[in-house]
Length: 582
Image (tube, rainbow, N blue to C red; front, top):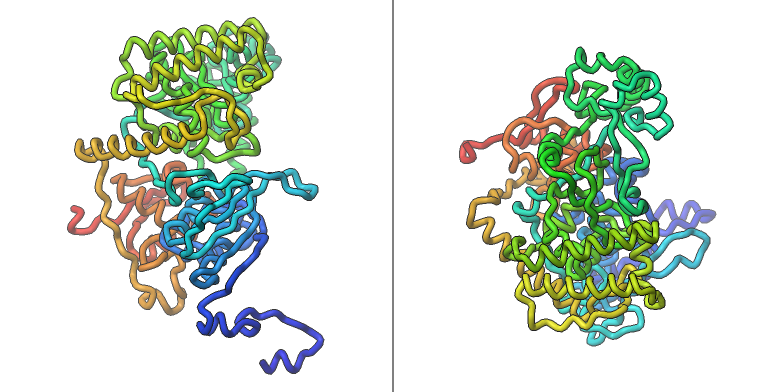
């Protein structure tokens, strides 16, 4: 107060001084808050604002994910500051209802008796920035009688900012059975590996023997754009050759020595593969399986539409494309169906108007039918895939262009109409495989989060997603009973009082002294995966950003729950094993 009176030229706005009745507990919160939180992508929070600030943010609650966008924490702060029966509203980018940001903010708020009264999930920002935003209004404790989604009254609005049969969204569990079926492509970690057709021809002109080491390199954009899903680029692939053998192709080896070796040496983070002539992540299990089949099933990481395709197995497929080492037309039927599309639209994060298809979120959680050996599934999948391939070849158009036509209600060309007919038939065959013969689907053109789509109607989509959630839990419990999921005991961190002193409070803690954010992800993964692990294995498995690594792992080591051995690139980590665990 002395400062305020002695410096009349300045007018600081100190919230506890301006609103003592709120902060001293007289009113127990604001009646209403309206906000426009600043945008900062989750992976840049610590870079821009510092790792200590991110640690503090991770202490908001025990389910905070350290990769959430900054707006997530502002929404939590508003929720904490409004009184019971109060309300708050804000605008944010669409990511507020996606992935880690949604789980940290909206999902947690709804679990704690917040209720979304109004939401407009996808509108263009009125300013010059080319972004899509969401508007959200949340009531604390009070349940809105008629929530409004866009211009429509609905029963509930869930944390995905979509209509739901219940206000909170149930979280599916990743299934081990599905996890074993799918992989992601190769991360080569070195631009020098990748060649244009002209560069390939140049190395071939030096020695045709070089072509033994150069193979097709398939990216997600090739899958979506090329009528036959053919590669635009090529890649040098020495596989797991020792150096003495790789040097038998001096043109290619020296090229990698002058490019990839220098590129990797200039990086601060550890490299998975110290031999520069080898790909960083070789995926030996995947390519071993691909070696026994002619083609495999893939889905691009980013795409406007859900589009699965069979491609040649004898090529290097780039990460983060999802790869199923199978020729199964039955699996294709299920994944290309409207039911999987409804699941993906709910579960996936978005990039503008495109979907990000990640196997961990979209497939590993997706409950498949009891059997993929049904003759009807195989036959309809083969018919649909064969007909679509012929349409793409005749029109010389890729998946994106074909599905633009497919979902356009004004498109009446005979081949597209026939593709829709086969798709509808395929949906009914897939539904029968699930035992859904009594469900009404009412196929047509309907508005979805991705725009207008030819699909099952909105009420059927909601019903199917709910059924698939139930089925996911059933499959998970079956796996638990079969011993496929390790039960993980929750290990408590030392009390906050015990962490005071020179180091200050360990703000990796969540409510109750449990791990939160990146620390929780790393510790839980190490507990569930015995043995010693390299930093990059841990980061790849947990999704924790490299920028969070040093502070997080050091805190875990200091407090005796993780131990380390080795130095530099040989450093390995594991969870500390207690007597009970031994």
